[in-house]
Image (cartoon, rainbow, N blue to C red; front, side, top):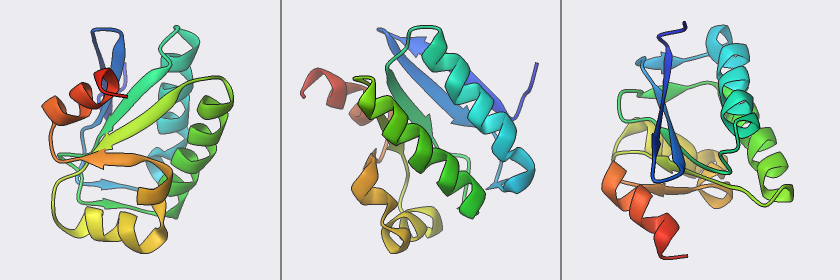
Length: 116
């Protein structure tokens, strides 16, 4: 079992947590496999929890963009938990915040699915 990513299901919503400070190309393939596995298990509402992560490189951003597009086509949605700081600035600069909505904490992200 890979401890870099953990998955928790809450009320039918999958929360994928990155358990690392920096997510890079080294973790990108496993991250992609984790997201695909979550979707294949019937979870079409996914939250990526970046609360322990302060940096992602372009390979992780690429996985998120590609997976988000595929998920949207299949009727799913992906959101994220990002706290103020470097990672939020990166999401803003890359335009990723326009692709997936972000929330400051788990409660807000979960609530956003019930208020669509």
